[in-house]
Image (cartoon, rainbow, N blue to C red; front, top):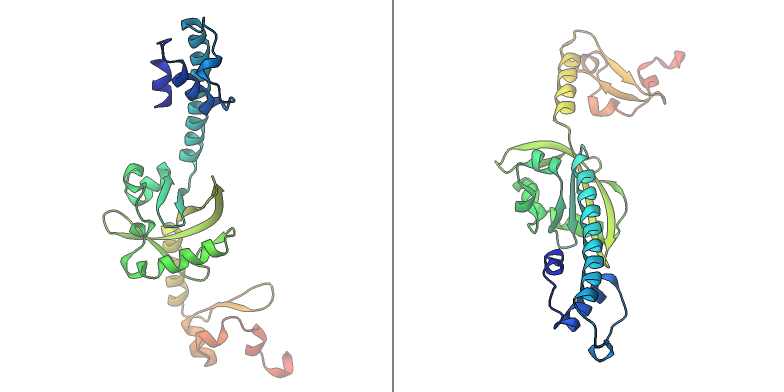
Length: 239
């Protein structure tokens, strides 16, 4: 809009309006019409409007470059304000959720949250803005997004606070983990179907995975073994 206004400035009879626009965009000190020389005419206006047009072109070029960077990001990006309204999204967000960005801007972020979780989401959002810091969302919980068609998919979300023009926002980076979850399920099915007891132990010697055969062989329930040292399955005289 600003560029359109600049292109149509041609009347030397409107110097005060032109100066006001120049002052606002270029940050020049305010001038008064009475201070203008009598020969302030079309040539002077053209110099000012050309400079202003150049400034607007630079701003538009910077904005276009930033948009290309944002849209080339492989993760979905959403910028959300404190009230939960979407202020910005990228091309990957459109692909993940099925909404065009024009349709998401100004809408509540809760439309991307499955209905069974929506009532609690505003409380989580308020908690983030009360103590904003970069972190993963929903640590320890399975997170899901809801597409425009109502279908759900598993996601991971990274949150980063941002303040612009004195207003707080959060940048949410969304990753579709459907393939990872499917691979985990296949692995779990293989582990559970094996006729032998299987135990996975981490570097600290704690059990992180056991299967049904382990439960049957040692008499422990799975929840009793996970996180415990492997030595509890070793006779005391050998520990």
